[in-house]
Structure formats: structure tokens, C-alpha cells
View 1: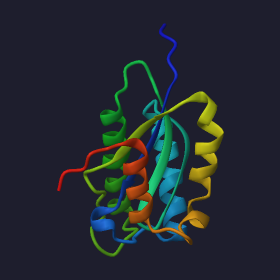
View 2: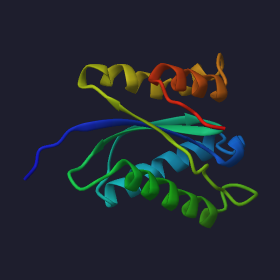
View 3: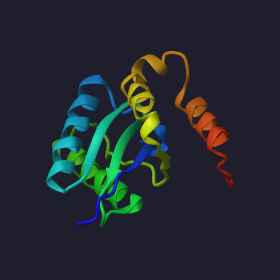
Amino acid sequence: MPMIKIWIHLVWATKHRHPLLKDSIRRNIFNHIRVNGRKKGLFIDCINGYTDHMHCLISLGAEQTIAKVVQLIKGESSYWINQQQLTEDKFEWQDEYFAVSVSESMLATVRTYIYKQEEHHKKQTFQQEYDAFIGKYGFNVVG
């Protein structure tokens, strides 16, 4: 059996970055994602976010790809949110997402960053956070 530990920090937003993830809804959604992820064999270490986006720290399994894990989480959760009618309008995630590898030595830092999202976004918007990620990790954004 392969022994693999590849940590990925994922970030994605609601469609058009609408602030649909209010406090109680957000906690409910993140709990559902954790439970459903376990059922699908996903290892979600931590999850949190703010009104218009979410962060997730995962560890990939031997047969998993980033794209497949993101598809499973986003697809199932948006379906569930709509089934539960947690938002007034149809809920959707943006197609895009951010993914970056995380070294073992940085896990505690990333976990703290994810868990402190509400506090973090009192000082910085998601757009500012997004722009900082793009700059820090050297992504070239077209458009």
C-alpha cells in the first residue's frame, strides 16, 4: 500500500463572490462537507471561511487528484445547499479555485490561518487576500 502525504490548501468562492455564507449557514455547510468528505474517503484536515469563500486543508490519497477532490466537495455541497434551501436563490460555487501545496513544517501556520478567517476578514477583503495569494505564489492570471 502506498504511503502518501501531500497537503493542499484549497480556496474557492461563491458564484460572483456573493456573501451567501452567513454565520449559522456557514457552520452547517462546513460540517456537512466534513461528514460527506469522510464518506467519500477524503481527508479534510480543517475547513473554514467567510461569507463569500472557503478554505480547506486536505491531504490527498493515493488515487486522488486535486481536481477530483475539489469537484467532489464543490459539486456535492452546492447540491446539498440547494436541497436544504439554505439560501434564497440557487447556490453555486465559482468554477475557479486556488490550490497550493503545504509543507509539513507549515501545517500549524496554515491551520491557524484557516481557523482565523473571520478575524482575518475584519481587516482584509477576500479580493485583497486573493491578490496576495496570487502575488505570493507567483500565479499569472489572464483576464
